[in-house]
Image 1 (cartoon, rainbow, N blue to C red):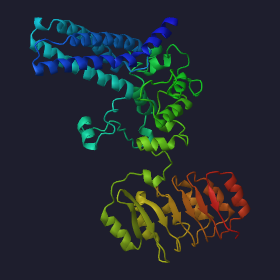
Image 2 (image 1 turned 180 degrees about the vertical axis):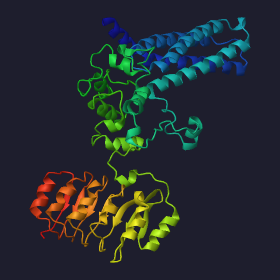
Image 3 (image 1 turned 45 degrees about the vertical axis):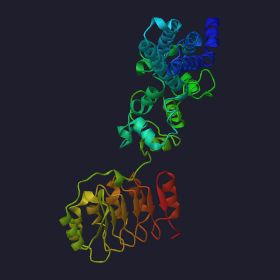
Image 4 (image 1 turned 180 degrees about the horizontal axis):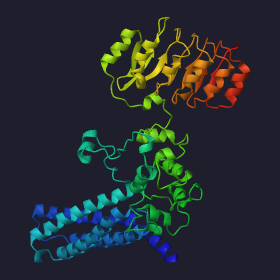
Length: 456
């Protein structure tokens, strides 16, 4: 532990050393090129001295940088090339010092070739070091749009997948694993296991690392992983220790996943979608987890226009719910409704989702036909002669959400039939024979059902 702390102490001197070789070596090369331009016979003794100082300071930067990399504060995939390029730069700098010490012993082309090689190495090494410290977008994030497009190749780096329904979303594979892949696996994989932790696979993640309780299912406070990603960035234990930290949405996604038991299998529909995660799912992935009316989930082929025309000729008012929804909003009012006309409506029964027979002469017996409309979600029967007997025909409608019986002849006896419609959310019973007391008692036993009733 003492040795680790001492090497970490030395590693913190890397920023002090890293700029010295750049200055010394640039100075040496510029001075040499200046003298070549002036065609000076005797080369300045400052040139080899500058090369030596550059080589020594590069060695210091390489050693301290190596120690700094051992702290685990940088992503290994980027650290590897930066480290070894730094070592190579030290070797080239010492070779350069040797050549410059005996300028007449080596060809001029070799001297200039070495200069160009070193400048290229300095540029690449400096760029890699900047990426490690400040992130890959540090130089370009404020560049004009055309330059950014040229550098990035027009690719949308942070594009996230969009999902059609919650049933199609695998919570770990689709939501959580991509976060770990982007932010954690660079230092916790099959080859590199910082802290003994491999996050590449669910099995290795379950095993954990040197620290116990990497993920405590259902307990974010007891999960070391969650503690690390929510520490202040300046804390040495903060993860990931780069500029590529988890965003707010990513942290909340991991938090919700752990709270739900950190499952590695199962779809989004199988978990409790809490209110705090709903906007994140909608914002990041386009997943709307709010319950949708049945009519928005039904997919049917477009109805033949001749059938629509026949309905209109029969006397029905017909509307579609939209250009992408073939379900129908049907209305009929008047005293000339017949069973034959309802038979015409039966021919498109799976397409009827909103039906209004308000102010018509519909009878209790005719509602047996309406009971076959499997996708019916709203039924308006206000101001008709419908009684409890007619309502009994409706108890088998599995997707009916709204029922209007205002001004009908129904009584308290219709309520048991209404309670059988599990999908029902609202029923209107103004000016009927249903008593407010009975309606109130029925509603108290059915939290999802709202009964709207007047005083009589």
